[in-house]
Length: 184
Image (cartoon, rainbow, N blue to C red; front, side, top):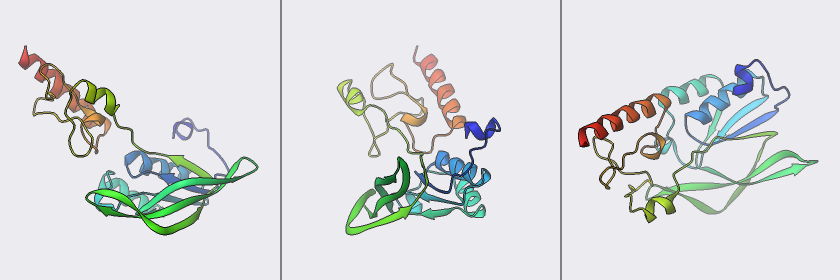
């Protein structure tokens, strides 16, 4: 995306596979289309209901002709002469809000270019060792002021929610700052 925004168009992307289901995945896929990719597909391990991308982002991708392949987990890549040729995938199903691999459902997706647009979560071991409580999704649990379960420790943004955007992160930062002031 950075190269596209700087008018450094990457040519010959071929078939592009974007791995992920958030807003960055949607933006990456749409950028690949703008760069002239032969085909663009998003491979996401969960279903639409559990996809963190905003609905407007998803709809824009569909309008741009991007294929969305839900319940698809990438296992590994196949290369030839140090170039990706395809991805080994497996179908998944959602059980108790988790993407579970379906036995004997492996298949191959063709891809010349692979973009990883997967989210990152905080270092769980560090948070647990400090006694910071996490919610069922693995994000830091906060109150209405952005404070964690430990007095004087505040959090916001990507560490506290799965639909974090820059705007929401800024708002969370302001909320936490007000919470800190309130607690003094």
